[in-house]
Amino acid sequence: QALAVESGGGLVQAGGSLRLSCAASGRTIFSNYAMGWFRQVPGKEREFVAAITWNGGSTYYADSVKGRFTISRDNAENTVSLQMNSLKPEDTAVYYCNAVAHPVRDGNWLFDNWGQGTQVTVSS
Image 1 (cartoon, one colour):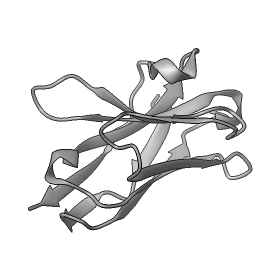
Image 2 (cartoon, helix red, strand yellow):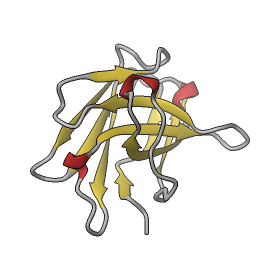
Image 3 (tube, rainbow, N blue to C red):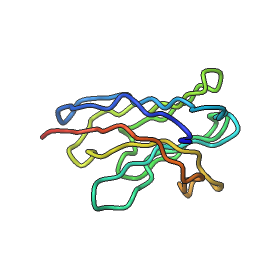
């Protein structure tokens, strides 16, 4: 069973914004884990985008999104979000959320049971 269900993707023009959401699936409790967002383009490896520690005290970002994306979490709601601003065509990908292994700053996912992801397409 997938760890989470992602939503919020869509088609947006360059410079626009989207907010992605990740909701826990089944009996998963996000507060037990650091959480992160990853993305994948067909033909390329999945890559780290952003991560947040279990209590939201620290966040980490890929250099390519630093200053434009913001990760947040709500442990009471068992959700993780990714606010994406100033989107660029190179941000086009399927976005996934997953738990993050320690050390969190390394940006490695913890589980192999991925959800369906949510497609983000940025037009130029």
